[in-house]
Image (cartoon, rainbow, N blue to C red; front, top):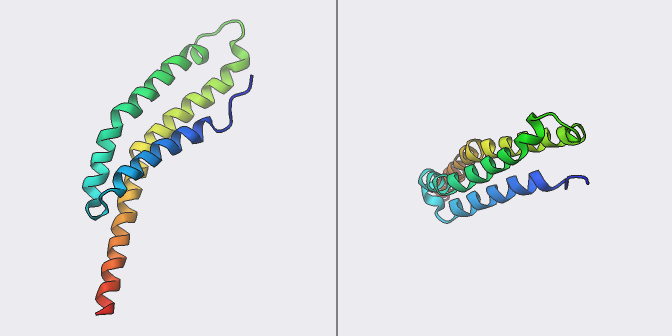
Length: 115
């Protein structure tokens, strides 16, 4: 049985979509909106990541009959989920704040030049 190739990107994109949706509700207050979105999603992201890591840990860490075949897949999924959680909670909110502030700056600049 092969792992589904869209498992990791699907998980990361689902998390990103929820953060983006919560942020887009109030674009005027980018910092506050992103902080609230991260606070609201921190526990679900942490719980799903921890349970996945705990479920994959025996496959990756405990040697035994049959684990040699799936150990590589387990390591890839384990660190992929961990990396997606870290990126979702750190890099993507920072990038979102940067883009929203840059967009507000461009709109304000466009308004100033139009007057």
